[in-house]
Length: 489
Length: 103
Image (cartoon, rainbow over all chains, first blue to last red; front, side):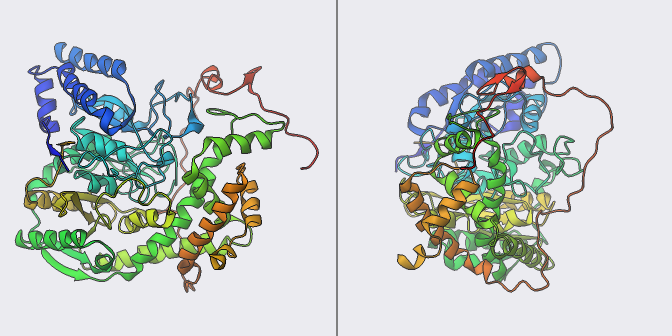
């Protein structure tokens, strides 16, 4: 336990202002980021690839615009890291899987093109649990990412590389994807802010699909304001994603300082007995802080939310088994040959996928197979309705809800990886809002007795990002010092 | 151990692996039989749930078909796409034979 404070970049607004005014070059900001990567990447393994040349070219383009009197945008010169399931044209996109070996996407994800259009400088592709399936990054085909607070522990997952890159001060902003908690859980374990927006707020075009009715892209940052700005830049309707909501990006930064006076905040009781003492205590302390800031705080029981975990572990694998059928050795990536097409398909998939991905495909295929469809997948879809209705009832009385983000702090490598159910339980508190398509954010709020970060989760109904981020900002103000990154391992 | 192993047999795992086009070795078959048994036991609460009069939810929001204007626009270049294929010939993806005797 030797984590110490790390040098900070300044806020995203400050970075962009200094680059836009010419006071600091995008190349200089990038150099600070790349130096930090060089110092720490050997210990942490946040990246599958650091794209130095492309980043330098992007930074030069930003500096060229400034010299020509043009505005590069609200993220001018901000170094950003991208989870390696976001397509980047001409840059390998692996999902941390052997099955995508050698594949170079022919297009950029909408999130990537919007970031670049805002002046951000992508510096590389971050490690993840293979195809975003996992809660520790131990399922990466390229080895795990380590937690900068304690390198003997996991950073969480699946977006562990993106979380650890921000938590160690390599970049001030990164992006991940969240299907059942894959942004919020690693944010909590790494002591940073992570936001899963309302389903449909951020385009999924170019996000390699895991479970299409649940997947959503969102930001990681060390502060609520930086996460809010990152989300504003990438959000908004995209005709390339048919599930993208026909709405403009939410305006979040402007109301972050509005406080929580009069907001009705519910502490969800049902998870508190299932989490470690420090994770439960952080929620209670957070609620007290919000009450002191003028919110109306009360406790609420929503036992239906506990159906979320079993329903999710049928629905997400079912969708995954369908989505991942595209990896067949025909059009891209790995091929392991065979005497006929079916044998080639099966050998390619048998060798190309790791154990967890195969396990999820098997769960999903079984749940969808003849004779079991109604009993498992059909029932899970109905359980999903029950969860959504329970949220609707609760939001009659509350504007936002508070829960722990995770059942425990960061755990040691190897402690759960051989027991799938233990690993799946990491998502207990984060899954219900995923099933409902609601927004949720994790904010660092405490340290455990051993000095590891503890997150509190703020939930809101669909399109409740403004209130959710106001509450997150109030929690950030009330949090004790030292609970958030960046830290140096 | 045997209680959960009876839930999903190795034969059932082999069948599902065939449906999923996954070549698994015997070790994997055995491991997935016991792991899937434990997982399906864990999610059994969902199977036993009383869902009379509860409609299923496939998607968080109503999904509508989206149509764009019927105008010709550029799509991905064929050569760019084929360049990513493990094998391509005559502007087509190349695969081993798909016809043959039934397995």
